[in-house]
Length: 163
Image (cartoon, rainbow, N blue to C red; front, top):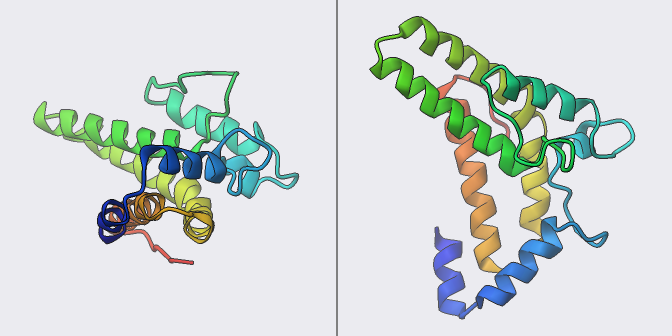
């Protein structure tokens, strides 16, 4: 949060922040950090790789799908974080609906997804984003993302190694 407060103190404009976001993750060839799991984990470094299909299957197991199916890769960092959020909401619904069996299955699915996907690539990708971010705001968003991963890992008793 200190980086985001520093953004306000420094007077970073929405235009500067949008430009920084686009330079970090944008669809341009000049993007500094690819926000796709398949790029970071695949042998050839391309989108729509094996990781994309694995992530798609994990989504489908919860009756979810990427918003632009077959047009944009399912393994975007934002979509993977959203999947964890949606899964968490389903766990809460199951617990409040007195369905402990479903809640446990969902927790197992979430643990597997976090371990096999997000924790396998996102910490290194986010570390690159921290190094390349030009605004305090984007550095703050990246650090909050790292903190969210760390919290999820701790909650699910998974090791989390900061790069």
